Amino acid sequence: MFRNTYDSDNTVFSPQGRLHQVEYALEAVKQGSAAVGLRSKTHSVLLALKRSSGELASYQQKMFRIDDHVGIAIAGLTSDARVLSNFMRQQAMSSKMVFNRPAPVNRLVSAIADKAQVNTQEYGRRPYGVGFLVIGLDQSGPHLYEFSPSGNSYEYYAMSIGARSQSAKTYLEKHYESFVDCSLEELIKHGLHALRETLQQDKELNVNNTSIGILGSGSVHETGVPPSGPFRILEGDPIKPFLDSMVPKDAPPAAPAATTDEDVQMQD
Image (tube, rainbow, N blue to C red; front, side, top):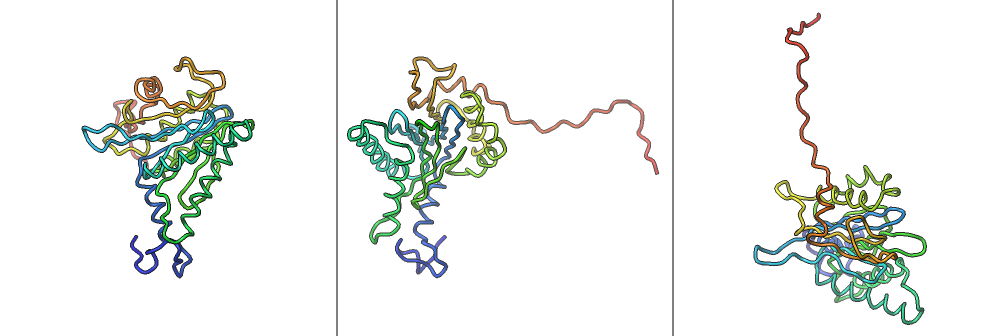
């Protein structure tokens, strides 16, 4: 990835028209543990794989609540995510105080995208090294956005970011057409299956390394969720019923059994 002359500052274009410092920031997102987002016509969900720095350390926080109607999952530098999530909270709070209404989801995403874009254009700044999946719920229904350090943001039916996220994208692309009519339980099951694709071969999803963020009415496994279905993060034992509902990975197909004991004659 080292580009020598043209990667010393984020304001210098290479002869190919590329900003290498921005591309390096996008690589930082790919180093973070995976996060998956999906939406149906009634719910938006986030699923994230948490990492631990060692045997004695707790697991890293991967999801942040912005407001009752907005939540995010991160991949990349957690410290940068903390700064940007606080900025989003300020924007949401300002909308409630000034306009007496929840901030529109697309406006919150555009605000952090504008903030990130400044760091790709001004001298002496570095791009943020974190990407977001943002879910929201407003009058037009559930939403899912991706934000990247380049200052771009896109809306998706389903998306994954982080390490080995391409495997999860492949799963989502195969099944996304069915997500619209899925129940919350089915949507989370699809998300867990996609997240499982990002794991190393010797790893498994469990109650310690998995987080689930839900926006919408409660599932059969939840209690005490208000009818409005505010954003909530499930961790630990509450996610065990969802993990138990997962379909095991397919075993290699067995060889077909012979139907008779007679020798098969080859025909010329």
